[in-house]
Image 1 (cartoon, rainbow, N blue to C red):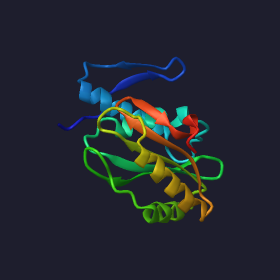
Image 2: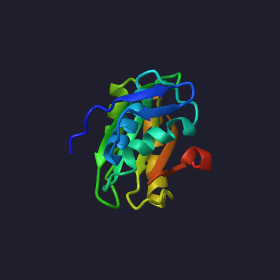
Image 3: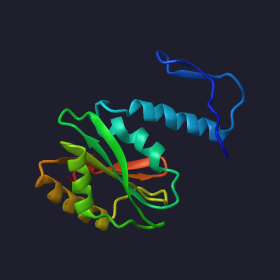
Length: 167
């Protein structure tokens, strides 16, 4: 289904949006994703897990397969790029630390927020998730890139490794 451009009246001060016509659920979701993407353009500052949570949920929550991605940041934690790096199946994705390091160097990133989804809708990190995070952190520190967080998205819920003290 092709989603058309949606005419909206928006009041950023109050945070309200009014549609100028009846909208389908798909159109509302499409528009919400576009609004969130605009908030995460280059130079947006990420200062806490909450700053990136809504955006990551919008990008990963409705996928039926696992995706591993990175939010690359500069030394002031401003967004450089959000890249989906690996795609897997319903219960896993093969992640290669070498490729993550290459992409971080390509972007000249100083920091990274790792993220992936759990299509099951349950964001609880597995032992494999924790092990992968340690491997990635060890690989990235060799090229002076800090891992700030690893956020697991399950449906509309998330788990932050930083908030859990896993980093």
